[in-house]
Amino acid sequence: MAAHKITVGNVEVVSVLDGYSVKRVPTETFPDSTMEAWREFPDILDENELIQSRYGSVVLRSQGKLIIVDTGMQTDPGGMLLDDMKAKGVDREAVDIVFLTHLHPDHVGWNLTDGRPTFPNARYLAPRSDYEYWSRPDVLANAAHVRDQVMPLNDLNLIDLVDDEYKITDEITTVSTPGHTPGHFSLIIASAGERAFILGDVAHSPAQAHYTDWNPMFDIQQDISRSTRHKVLDQLEAEGTLVSSGHFPDPGFGHFVRIEGRRVWKEL
Ligand SMILES: [Zn+2]
Image (tube, rainbow, N blue to C red; front, side):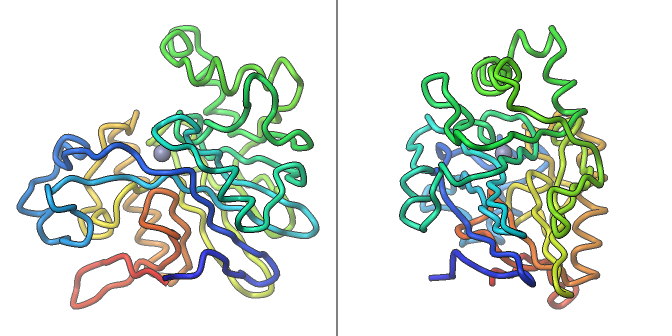
């Protein structure tokens, strides 16, 4: 089994797990795809040719700060994030910063528990433009998860809105990767000559390493998402950057590499 803990220079990166999505028909989740193409990935399809998404977060230790990136789904169907953190030696009360790549339900689920901050000593950071999008009355009216798991943080004065190229620490910087949601951010880790990229939802399946045009139905700005995915994956492949992906198979660490002319996801 692949290691759930890696280091990038002086930054420690721990993959933690909230659970898995319901099983879905891949061509429904990715309307541009075909079953014929999916059958090129026998490891991704289950015995009924269905796919399932991992709800993964990462915990970062950088310059004395304990940071969790995204907080899972909490309710659907397992919600084991806190147990998994404990099992991997991460104390939720010691978390200094909760960073949200975007404000979808499977990334903000554990922000609060029974109306109280799950991470009682943390500041919560969210991309400003995503927060502004989800705050629009017409959007918020249909986004119970934002009303329940994000807006109360504002009332409690616990949320800080951050922009592109914001430094969480000297080693961790935000980068705007829009399309999946309008204000979606990824993170760049750069420490002691090493680099890694926290992908967020720029991609949802290793199949998109090759079929980079495939957008999941969850992408809000389909054209922008596709163009962001091409740009980001091309760059990560060219640089050989280590990637952490929350929806890819556990623990979600790997590289985009080209083998015989075809880009693939290669797990660590
Ligand atoms: Zn997601």
